[in-house]
Image (cartoon, rainbow, N blue to C red; front, side):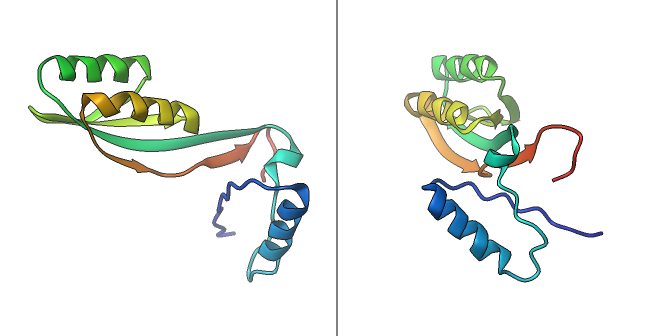
Length: 122
């Protein structure tokens, strides 16, 4: 089978969530809608690319924070870095917030992706 998986993260009352699920099931050709909050624990992650400009002490601080957050340097020039960071959304939010005073230039985020835990397929 050639299937694509789309992850939608939303909030709402149980009635609103049910309405969203019913509307999704009416789309063609949706094979199945799975609510990961009902089926058990899910693993959620997000990826972000974070561009930071800085010289001197700001460069050192950006690298120190990247190390603390386990972000990887994927591009570096004499005046800037691009970091790749993955994790929960609040971790990425915190990293971005701390990079603001250092010289945050740009952020590109994937949005949340998720998969159910265990050996079974979704």
